[in-house]
Length: 563
Image 1 (cartoon, rainbow, N blue to C red):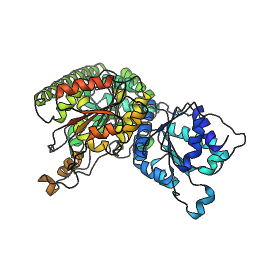
Image 2 (cartoon, rainbow, N blue to C red):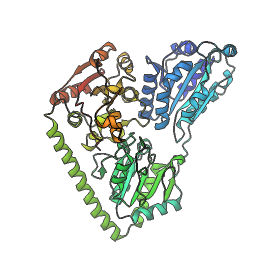
Image 3 (cartoon, rainbow, N blue to C red):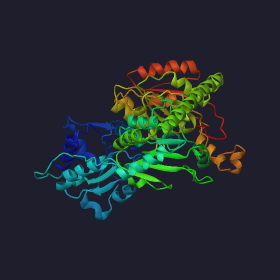
Image 4 (cartoon, rainbow, N blue to C red):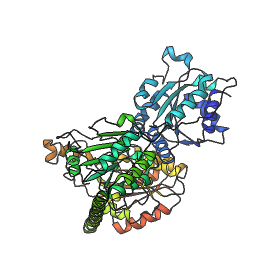
């Protein structure tokens, strides 16, 4: 076998099914080898942003490596924003790229450039393979490293001449990822139980890594044992749902700005943070401290880098989330006194009443806004919620429109089916939804993508059409970068306060997303009425083809985000 064939053999032996790519001259040996490889399918994207985004969606949904093949330095450059997103989300991507023939490097040939150091900041491991004999070991290490918790992307540069070289017999042992996640130390668990059991008003912050660790049921058990409200990550930094939004202990997400987060959390005396970064903020906003100083923080995570990183932490538990939460629940059951149990029962009753009242209030507000035209964000999301089946998967990249409305309306029955953009690099959402649908062909997938964000990776629609990936998109279209307007007002910029902005309106001309989607092979329509939207969306989700629905919404810039 030559080097390219060795690469494919190692991928196939690891159970990889797809290679996502956009080829060029330095990847020709690999694409040529793909012709005779029936265990792997090449998924073509028209540009590197869609390629990376689709691979990330696939990897997040399957928790298996998303394998990418980029075209040398310019291709890596085009994909760097999405590599940053994967780094922030801890997505297990194996990103490869061809490099120029080593015999030409001294002359600095066309397309040549340093890639290993360029990729290094946003990867767990970045290297170039200089010998064909090293390809099996390099591929094995790349896959194992990507999947080793804390998971994340890796990068391999493979020169075109190495891809073409014939190899002697080599060790082709398949990758065997090791999961080192064990229960946190027993003494630290007991300290955490003592803090949690003596809390008078605890809360839980649930992060994406709860879902990715298959620990939702265990977190539900801990929340019920404490009678504590659970705040999911997507409000502030987005990401996955670590707790069911339909559960009566589910609480609204945190706001975007530090002072608002501080105010929201001030009622609590103890916080248990599980599987999230505590806390990543969007812009600097006085007062800087998001978590009030009086709060006793207990943090459980399998990523030691995140423990005690930004906030004083009374108990830091490093270990697997699933065994750690299971042990916490058992220890609480063993240590809670009758008086504490009575207090917890009363607290749980209060929190469940707050949850019910909050949901009813939001539903009433949505009903009151339905007659307004263009549709408000809440009316739009309420109309979407009415069409969603229980097994829906939702990918969101429309920050000022979605506002955690679907979660607060209880529209996402299965928390594993929610995906938000933790890196915030635009162009991710539309393509992530395609990747999720490819991973879950028997589950309906909806992408709610702002019109501005969609334009960073719109070429992905062609890939959905080319491979008949039946994802549905709703585009809330306010023809502007509204998050920037809200941010400019939030930090008190003088012209923003008067409603004057530069470079934030997508008008004159407006993008015709219906025509654009059609040109890329995706059937599209424009809908302005809420009842029609619910019906059209329900039909689209049942359609075995990709569909796009463009929905004009209110263009008034709110004074602040609502969570």
